[in-house]
Length: 359
Ligand SMILES: *[C@@H]1O[C@H](CO)[C@@H](O)[C@H](O)[C@H]1NC(C)=O
Ligand SMILES: *[C@@H]1O[C@H](CO)[C@@H](O)[C@H](O)[C@H]1NC(C)=O
Ligand SMILES: *[C@@H]1O[C@H](CO)[C@@H](O)[C@H](O)[C@H]1NC(C)=O
Ligand SMILES: *[C@@H]1O[C@H](CO)[C@@H](O)[C@H](O)[C@H]1NC(C)=O
Image (cartoon, rainbow, N blue to C red):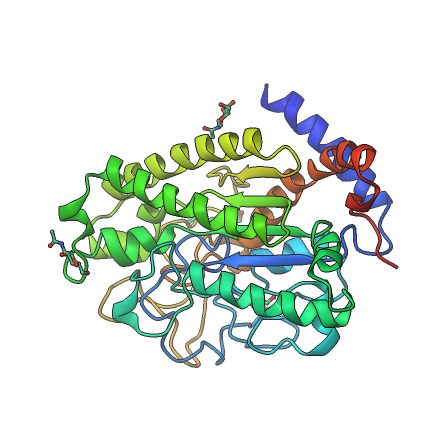
């Protein structure tokens, strides 16, 4: 079954890759808590940026604030979509740069506004959507001749990826010291409440013109070295992973529901995977930094990381290595290629909806 699916996906991928010249979509918008960074929700995300070595050791520009040794998942997706530059963060995107999309993702962000508030600054999903409206207003002047209707025609052609939920578990539900959600909700009720709120947020994006949504399932946060240390365990924390599983299965149902309700939009669930090449054989110890909560699992400035980074799943106690991000990014991209079929149908209904090329 999986093989047949993969074949179809591969065929789409090949078509898109061959058609490569201009990016396959004119624009790519990124919402999230740092997208597929399984456990990006580490306690240090909102502390000083990790713009010091050895972070970025395998990145051409060195340390840039990315929470690993190289590219992150959204970087990889942007490259596979054919963009020649990475999508700029909202905080620094200027002028025409926003035409190809904006990255709103914020490390500690959650679906719920209060998530990770004990850490200080973070941009919740609601605030990321507000920032997107700011971008849309700027776009109406750049390309829409002041018209929101015109601007939305452009936005329809963009891919949106959204990856939220991790922090609502790690920096909320499983942190009873700061948050009471676990005494208010059972895991089932919490998953339901979260997904309900998430669904409203996705519909808000739909109203703003988004049509092609790749939505990341939450990661197995219970398997990050940082979380295992927090629970004093040597193996994955099942309690955490099963709560997250409830969230993912509700999310899947809700996306199916949204697909039925909005036939001019497509919502795709992008699931994680625990299947990796055999030589990624160090999965419980980070390449850099300890896993204990006392040092918060962060790689310290100028600490010497492992040299065989190819063999490691985790860069620090919460963030995967670039190698994992590349694999996850490719998988996500393969999923996103199913927008190709959607586009064909949409095109036959509405010439404006074609998503390839912008000129
Ligand atoms: C991933 O990279 C993008 C730049 O392409 C950046 O805006 C974003 O903050 C990064 N996320 C993490 C968790 O490093
Ligand atoms: C939980 O905390 C919120 C504030 O964060 C408060 O409004 C609410 O009353 C609390 N609920 C319970 C059952 O303690
Ligand atoms: C998501 O829902 C669809 C339709 O009900 C189902 O076929 C698919 O297996 C589900 N996927 C997951 C990961 O639950
Ligand atoms: C992991 O794989 C590499 C290369 O395939 C090998 O050299 C190394 O000994 C392995 N490490 C462990 C912990 O198995």
